[in-house]
Image (cartoon, rainbow, N blue to C red; front, side):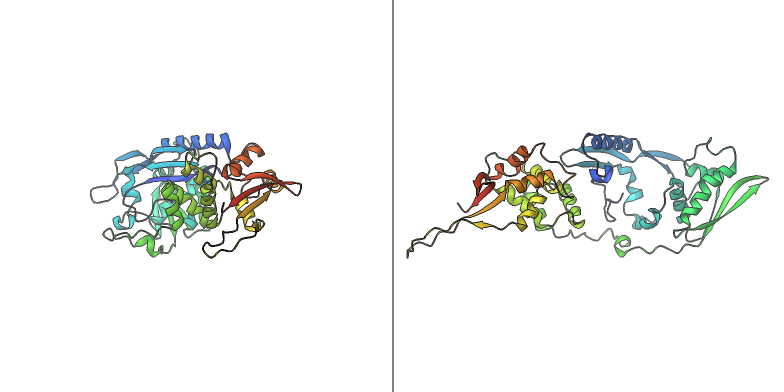
Length: 378
């Protein structure tokens, strides 16, 4: 729902990264959890009460159940789930301010609610926030809250304690704190009158100004996104990287470093450059090396005497980048906080081959120590 933009005119295929679904869980366990979530999403249906010809509530309404998600597709290489929303929900989720039949609320208020019943009661009251009161039958309320006919059926006090009182306690800290009055027929409670004092919601201008005729000017695309898309990284992948940058998971310079690494001469050709780039960036596979490269001093090779000539310029002094194998091993054995949960080679030798040797580094021995050397300008 959060990925649907206010000015969208149709649904898109929305991408949800795996960490938003399973946290720090990785491997087969994470895959099984995501698989189960995808299946439950496909089985989730929503109940829609159909209104009258003029948008009025009917005393004996027609209704329909609609599947919310039409497709849930897990892509391991992208590390997340792609979902499609049923187009039948366009009238309920898109261009809402223009259509007028909707209820507004604030996300910060809803996040404080732990009970699903409290969440639904909040929406029921929010529909009537302009009036400050709403009366609803116990039967209708139970139905709207999804309570089974045999649940809390023995005594009204159980329903009051487990559902109503808990909702009243949770909503006391929101903008819709309420009082209840129980209307009886004989001894039985038939209706509940909720009273509350809620001010109208004031939303940001970007959420309320949605003229359908106004052309949408797309934002200027970042240069790094253009570079990645030229290689083959999709827009969904760029969105994930864009969110990581906003969350300061890595600096934008890291993207350039990964691109530089990919362009270095290597023995074996990368078969899928887009996948390689995406995994290196979002998996932070080269982040520690990038940080170390900022600290390492570039060592110039020994200068050779250059014979001065009047016709030819002096050749550029070759430069080499040098890493001590012991330091690389230390980074592999003790990954930093940003990379310890990410995928890495099973052995140090594989790590050395993939990250360094395949990128043009060679092993040498200098001053009795093994070093990795990458020569430039030769």
